[in-house]
Length: 284
Length: 334
Image (cartoon, rainbow over all chains, first blue to last red; front, side, top):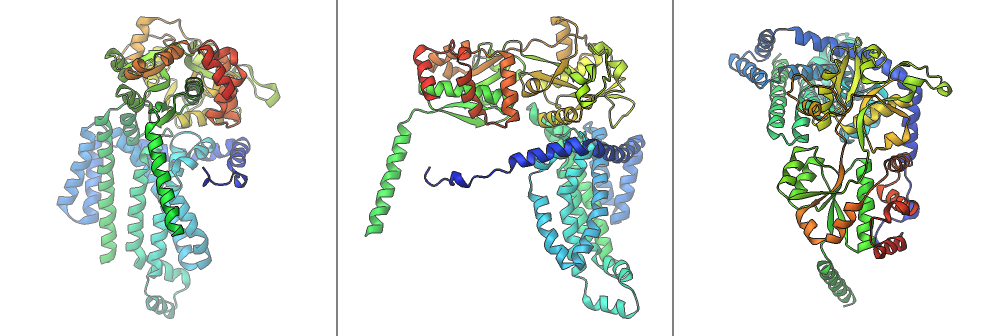
């Protein structure tokens, strides 16, 4: 015991943190719930839209998307079969719920992540400040911020989307930044010489050249969003994660494996499609 | 040379210590159950076993199901608070004689559907109006669905069920059917105990109406003024229809009175008869337990410290459980 940390130096920040979370809930809770309720409308709209589509039409759409991305009939067919199998094990409805959640979270990631990446690429100060923040976002155990977020924004889909955002945003920001910084300076110079302003250079030269890197970032973001699905179900967001959780809690290994494999299948489908689009952007 | 002697002394010391440790009796492993009443009861029992009877103890973490499985294999020896008879794994192990449920440690342990008191009576101090003044029983719920509005389906009310995978989740889902609430209420499964607690606490802190499944003994019960909605009197036949998720026509009844006991493994039962006798007499008065838990959770005390304080402050509660010799030993150690 002689080697233990001296007690005189103990100082806990737990109490002030608890107090500030409590006062946040008291003072801003109602307000923030209104914001999250209106965002929730978007998610439920998307979800009911997906569910309104007949299952075969959705399969056809996924097949068409996969073909458009990769121009390979074989691959498109394989992905459609994979999705069909998720339906076969009876998880179709949950698949759509998960899809809606992942799509909204990814959409928000793109809206936030790409501009942030641009900022990082252009402003070294911003990079010095934001890089450590990104590290924290990726490593902080999600339950640490999940429960306070839940108390502020309510139970269910919204805190799940927030948590996914925090966890899945960093790769997109990093890879957007990387892609932009790897653009050959001479190309940039050439565009400037031809009279393009900064915005035009960014939009028409740099972003297109950085697109493969950005697509790789997007791909990573989607994969990480999917891996948050189980955690999301622990705060009442329905979907495939729910079945994994039930499987664990009731020692129903089979059910957990089924839902787990469905998540993997969904990941494979999204991964192949986004990667194919990424590769196409390289060729162009 | 000096360095070498020192190194040798250290090595010899380490060896001696290892030898001493091997000579010690194997500690009694308690399941490290994480809900508040469970962790407090576990620590109270550990203090009595350690201080009063001189056996070393230890805890091993795990989920309820895995701890029950571990108890059946004697990987752990004691689960401090076991809701005996609720989980299939436990029932099977008990029938096979691998585990024993000792005593009736918290009488009147309760579960049901609750709302904060201010929903019915209002709270003039905080300026909360009574939103459901005539809410008494589950049969009044359809009238008040708009009070407990669900954010995802605003035309319905929200009932906070326990997380999917808990036994109570099945019962509550069947109850919703039995009470004819499926059209007016969303059966919202909360995903984890932490999420259920956080949502209830957040709602109560903000003075908003909330309808939820909960159970006692818990800190929540001691901390806030809550009202339990009345349900039809207990009926064993109706209870069977509630416990069976596949039954299409469940009939309503209040939940089976819970029997909380100390779960022990068969080898423990054989090896420590004097501890078995103690565990059989354990009896926590539920109101005292609820207030102790509320204080523990509010002041964020560790369960160990709360258990010590509990033993010190309430000698009348535990004196009857232990032998006179153990009693004086525990008191001396506190």
